[in-house]
Each structure stands twice: as structure tokens, then as C-alpha cells.
Length: 166
Length: 388
Image (cartoon, rainbow over all chains, first blue to last red; front, top):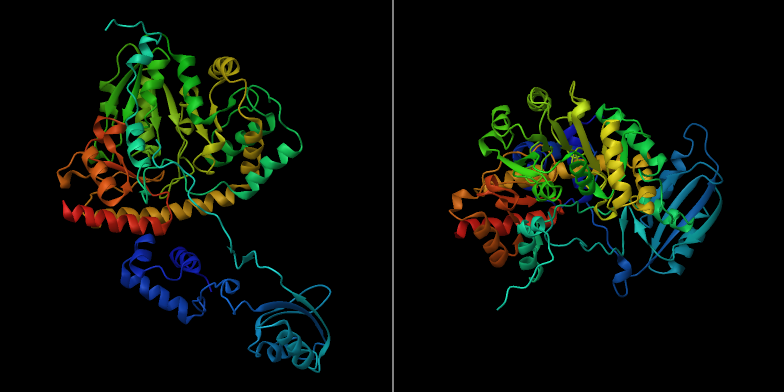
């Protein structure tokens, strides 16, 4: 679907800050509040804006640090449905946070989140590897998140400018 | 007490200290200030540009460059000016890389002024124009623009200031502090006056990349103006590189070679690592410039509309990152307004009269701040305006 210049602006602003008051957003794009609300609704209904969520640094929360693993999965595609059927079987598990079909040495990249390494290991050995089409899995645990979805976790972005300048 | 002898020159002694300095001292001592007083981008220079400078250091490029700057950079500047602004300058003969646009302005003025020559300075404007004219031995002649004309100079106003000693005019569009941008029609009017009186124009186009509603037109692109224009620009604003101190000046060969004489004696060359950074900025930085411009534009829309809503009448600035609202409705002078706003609500803005007489009754607010800062600033300013 093709968006207008203003719709694109709205998407860009909301992608960075979903919590901006609609009154302020309206001013930024030079529309009335009502017009802006209508456009947002349209973007939501057409699933261009899929969801509003927060980026949480779980590693900061005691007891909630959790582990994330990226798993390279080789599968046998099926006639007629290709990778879609096995992909769906995998992404329906709530442990799966992301799933991508990849080019290259393996087929699916699965991102799993769990409370402990054990929990992830159990999921891989009991749920994932046992699926009929899965040929092999290679599990990589993430040791530290530096940047996620375009957001740098530990950033020193203090304003370094002097207070008044010509 | 006996009067001690001063070693200072009369010219320097006669220079007024910048009004901004006083305000800076006042603001610097207060904690928790939201500053809308800064004349520079809030963006940090793109990483790819910073990385290019680091690489140049690692490779040991720490010596002088040619006086006029790295030829590679001048070639990039030439291509950039041609592609973006439809003006053609020879990299070898008509471009000098300078220490910021400020130095470009300085060597331009020194190259053209004889003692007593008059240079027209259109106010409100950047604080250094008139002092630099005076330091070059010239006489700054100020002309005031009016709010009702959106701070655009008219041909008549300009002509009234011209005498037989007038040598040049300093023009700045988009303008600091008003944000006003001159369109092709405005420039043609000024060009006609310049041609009629055989004047040179120093065109400060440092904010050219930051124009929001219309495509920026360079004065040198106006028919017949290239030969009488000294075009000054740089990397500070559009590319968010203020601290690198890198600008450039483009002019016909005769003037460029004269400026180069001053430049080579006074500066030798612009800093080498900054020049390597600038090459990267011109080669691969355009996307970042566009992204920053879009961001500024949204903030401008938000901020100017908010100012008007809280009763500070503000024209829509076509470029730069300044709003220049009138504060006359409050009954305060610019300085009173700025000082009280700073002390009572901790928002720093710059009194408009710092930029010239016609800036009285206005304040300059830079919207080169994050949206969160702007939202908070608007809240505080609203509270302040309602109270007085």
C-alpha cells in the first residue's frame, strides 16, 4: 500500500515514540488533531502500524534477566506450501520471539527467549528438533545486547553543547 | 589615578562585546536549564563521518594540506554545489576550504575592503557581521528589516542605504536569527539592486541545507550574479559538524586568489582531519542530512504552532532552526523577557536585540532540541506568559 507523505511522517514519528501526545503529533505534521487521529486509525486498521510496544532492558531487572538464543534451523520444505507450514508450526510457540526465513547455509532463524539456559535447551531438544521437517539445529546464546531494534541500550547522549551560542 | 596607556587598537576598543556573551554567563550558572539558546544542531556528527576522521588519524594524515584545502575535498565541494545548488566553481581556482564559515567571511571582507569602504549589514543578523567589517577597516552600515515583511529586505530599503562608498552587502538566507528564507523572486530583486549599483554580495548560505518548504536557491545561481557573489557555506549546520570548524568559500578566480593570499598567511590551511571527515560527509552523508532536515521540520511545525498558541506571535521560518517570535504582547523588552524566563522558568532563549535593533521585541529560540525538551520548554513558556 502506498502512503502519502504525511502518513509516512506519522509512521516515522510513532515508530520512534509511540507515546507522543496526538496534539503534539498533529502540530508536527501540520494537521488538526481530528485529522491526525483519523490517519492513525487508518494506519492501525490496515496493519501498517501493527502494535505499540516498549523496548525493555530486562537485564536491568533483578530476577528477570532471562536468556535469548538465536537458533539456525535446517528444514525440509514441503511441496505446495514451501517453508510456510513449518514456519507457522514454529512461530506459534510463545517462546519464539522472532522467526525469519533466511538465505544461505540454513533456512530458518528462530529467536527464543526463556528464563534460563535450561529452559531454552529443553525447548530446542523437545519441541523444535522433534518436528518432522527439522533436519538440524544450531543454538547461539546471546551474551549481551548492545543494540536492539535500532536502540542502543547503554547510551551516553548528554547534550554536550554550551548553553548559549550565536 | 593616572590613566595608563592602552596597547589595544582603537578599532578593537570600539567593538562592543557580544550581547550573547553576557547572557551565556547568566545561563551557565543555573542548573536544570532547557536551552533554546544554542545556534547549533543537537545531532552529533554522523558516525561514518567521525569514523573517517579517526581513520585519517590512524593512517597518519596529520600534516598540512594544500592552502586551499585537500583537492579531493574541493572536488567534492564543487560537485556538491553543482548538483545541489546549480552553481559551478572550479575546484582548483575558485574554492577555498576554511576554518568554519566565520573565517570565510573574514577573509572575504579583508580581501575586498579598503579603509572607509561601506558594507551593508542587514539586521537582525548573525552577531559577527558588523564587527568583522570594522576589523577589516570598513564601515558597517546597518539596515533594519521589518516583521511585517517577514524580515525580508526590500529593494527600496536596500537602495536607501547605498552611498558612493558602498562596496558590498552581506546577505544571509536562511537567516540566523529569524529563520527567514529568501526565494528566487526576493533574490532577483536584491540582484537587480546589486547590478545597478555595481555591488558585491557576500552570501552566507550556511543554512542552505536546512530549508523546509521551498527548494533553496543560491544567490550565485541568479542570472548575472555569479561574478559579483562570494558564496560562503560549510559543514557546521547541515552536516551537524560545528566543532570541526570547517567551511568553504566559492568566488570568481580573482577574488578567490586574493582571499587565498590572506588565508595562507593567517591560517595556512584548515585542520586536516576535519577535511577528511568532510570528504566522507559529502560522499556518503546526504541521507543523514535529509533525515535531520525532516526532523527539524517536524519540530519547527510543532514549536512555531505552540508559540502562536501561547500568544507569542511568530511567522513561519522557512529555514535554519530558529523561531523568532514577537514578545511585544507581554509588555516586556527582549532582554527582560529572556532574563525573567531564564530565572523564573529555566528556559534559555536569546534576546532578539542582540542581533540588531530590529530584533527588539523578539526572542530567538532554537528548536534544535529533542521533542521532549521542546515539549517541556513550551509548557514552561506557557506558564510564564500566562503569569506576566
